[in-house]
Image (cartoon, rainbow, N blue to C red; front, side, top):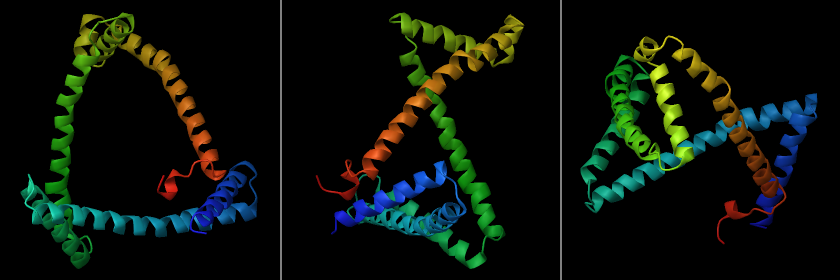
Length: 205
């Protein structure tokens, strides 16, 4: 029953969602509002609790065993604890907003700015003209980057129009092809889960 129950629930809920989307009916729409919009909020709350538990245990064990970089884990635990206390105590008052504006937002900006260097390094390795495909990627990327800055328009006034054409037609066609492939893969995976073919989410082998 421990394995049959989840399979039955996945089968019923999966076909109920398919029915709601492809055969809309007031009863199915009411079912969607109750099961998705309300139960999803309840499940998300428990997921946040599980995430908080996992976060706390991971950093607690790291600090306790004095693993490499344990002081960063200690800072993470203290920051989370202080934020929770202030959040519950002040109900998102000025102090909570200052923590977000002057600590969290600058840290996020710093992390994203560091990503630019990793992207540049990855682009340098990917844009090496080793074959025809890599050469086309290099030429296209160079044109797009030049067309997105004022220097490109200074070099040739029609370069921004060329970049817009590249983004609007070849790039969009490739994106749609990828999205269609991803959508077909999601459909196939969903049907395997609904029909009980894919059971890895149950755990075990």
